[in-house]
Amino acid sequence: MPATWIFLIVLALSATGYLLGRRRALVSAGGDSRHLHSLPAYYGSNAALLVSVPALLALVLWLFAQPMVIQNRVEHLVPETSYANEGELSLVMSDVRRIAEGLDLAVEQGAMTEAEATDIRVETTNIRDRLGAVGVALGSDVEAPILVAAKAWREMNATGNMIRTGVVLLIALAGFGLGMVRADKDFRARNSVEKVILALLILAASLAILTTVGIIASLLFNTIEFFKLYPALDFFFGLTWAPSFGGGSELGILPLLWGTLYISVIALAVAVPIGLFAAVYLSEYASSTVRSFAKPMIEVLAGIPTIVYGLFALLTVGPMLFQAFGPDGAGWMGGGRAVMTAGLVMGIMLIPFVSSLSDDIINAVPQAMRDGSLGLGATKSETVKQVVLPAALPGIVGAILLAASRAIGETMIVVLGAGAAARLSMNPFEAMTTVTAKIVSQLTGDADFASPEALVAFALGMTLFVITLCLNVFALWIVRKYREQYE
Image (spheres, rainbow, N blue to C red):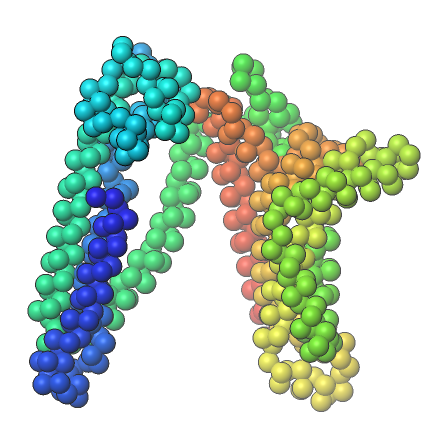
């Protein structure tokens, strides 16, 4: 049975459990809810949670675990001659899974019978064409060992799905029965429901933390593998970025870091003053009519896709700058793609991040502080400068930090506006690139994931993560210093 149907059945049982649990509790109290320990809704909610939470948790875990277990068992059926390293093995297993799913799809659409799918052989059937007819594209002809592995995958997957259906539904029915037993007037249903909700909240927080740990671990392990193949000193202090899948690569990160920081600084130089001044005006000087119109218009910028900003940089800002600073102007600019092009457009993109957050933070400053300053004879501008902004400084620093992180992680504007050249230069009118742009380029195409040219993407990501972490620590230090000085 498909997972979607299992999910719907569990939801139906959960809704039924809610109604019957609530009804049984009222019946046990003689129809008078005053004799119940908890409100009637808690008894229904307790039954619904007992049905849905354990069953859906088991379903989710099963959906994650089953493919990994099957792949671990099927890998042994693939001969070692079919792959050269772990990276190629993962590609082979992707083909195995695609063939297995394609056979299931062909049976489902009636393109072949179950018996044909079970007995299909490469010697008598062009499997690539048969599966292509149902929309499953394969890059090459299917070999006999790969087909054997795909059949084993299909059989194990069918068995696993059948067992999954039975286990999940049994858990749901057990929860349904327990909910009916507990639907008694003396049962502390409210306490039970609140414990389950608390456990779900803790699970949500734990998943967020574990996701962060998983991201760091995946970056760290692959970075270690990269440094086993490429010297760390050459990576961190190399001045040349020239990856070559044929060998002899030079993978120095300094040109990429320089481009990242250069473009980010220009973007922040545009976004922070404009965004902060806009926030001060909207919160302290603008009338309610102007504010109701201006703030939504500024926030529209945050909803524009970054690819649109990239096209704006490529088609509008770049040509304008080239006309002013190119051969016909100052002569500093050799083409439309440059650091200045990406920096200006990225700064425009970051304005609503700084403006909206700073505006909300400034509005959160107590009005009593403004009234006290004005009552002591300070002007409006003096109140803003000496009272409001220092009080809102921690939040403003957080807004600027968010904008900086957004700038460092941007890719599309850089690709379309700044070019792909990795160089060290002080000229803002030259083409450069960033760490994120090179991460994308290194993981596209038919790269061998065991090679340093592919693994370097994880080292770049780990370096970027460390830089962002240091920025956060530095921002917290600034916030703490100024907060203590203000207090």
